[in-house]
Image (cartoon, rainbow, N blue to C red; front, side, top):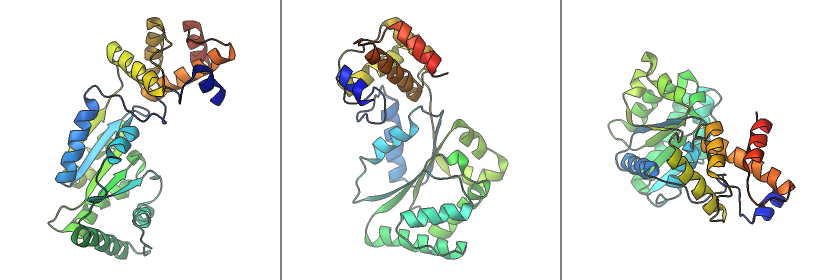
Length: 266
């Protein structure tokens, strides 16, 4: 892939994870305002969206700008295991050597949080990614943990991030105790509008190091239709097309190579 980037004179592929500046037409600003609000009024937030729509990238962008003297961030992405293992992973991320019994583990986490808030003046933020994979027992259990840990004080900000089924799951009756605690619900959607998608592509190429999109209007539309407006899918199509073009010594991305890339990625 380095050969392809060198051929086009780019720092990275458009829209890939190496992109430092995120495109924002207002959606990211709205997310930032809700993120900040939940920092100031600690509680539970939920962000959902299709895979590849940009949930994790947006949250990491926001988290990178928090004041680390005021907040202590814990990010957890490995969620496909049991309830106690999840609490244990959280405790380990906090630098604790957790006990095996749940009650003792809860006490250790509670003491750590109280120490941070009382003596360090730092409030904890937990971001739990891929939350749709969390075990059902955790969703039923977590409100009890919050009650145990914080009594009447709200000290912890938690973001659950996941696929659209996460929102539907939390609306089910067995998880009513957790659902009632959710203060912010956000959904990131694919970019269905043509002009917004064109702006996204243009920003992606500019962030990668060129003011030229290298694509025709019809090429952008091909990518829009076949990516469903999801940035990660658009990135894969553009990256594959660039590789095909570099192999042919071409300095732009013609429609026929985009069609070839679509076939390769099926």
